[in-house]
Length: 160
Image 1: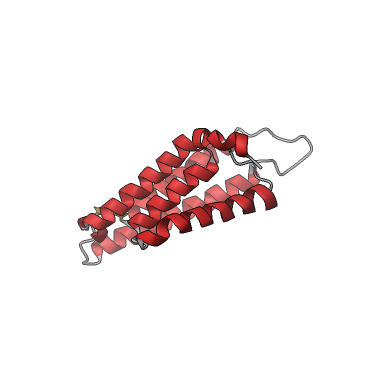
Image 2 (image 1 turned 135 degrees about the vertical axis):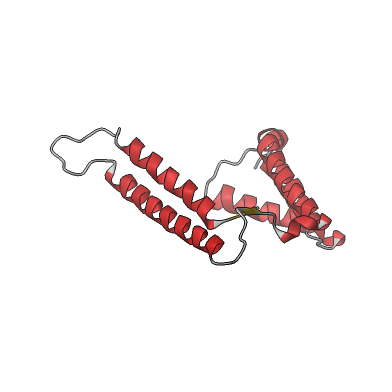
């Protein structure tokens, strides 16, 4: 969904205001003029200013003769293939979140990558070998080099 800049600007301005209100509750440090809320407050103020600028830009685009809608469906939504790809992308992310602890990283990532390659029309003869190779490379980089504790799941007894 494509939203008018004024809609995003209003959301950013509200977020900036909410952060500014929240950082007021941060504790003061005795003897310090600058407290822990100064930097989040500055970022929030910048977010609010950018939000206001987006609101002005969005309202000008509606007044400038172009009938820019507040929200508009993207062109790809009319394509069945693109809707399927979007559904597989969302579904594979949900699958990963729900299955990675039980199945483990290797099996979950293999299924995840194979599904994405299939929907992106990688030649079927390459999907499984590529998904396996990429999964093992990613596992080695994160597990061995970066020391990230990836879950083994059902492969725990074969963990190396």
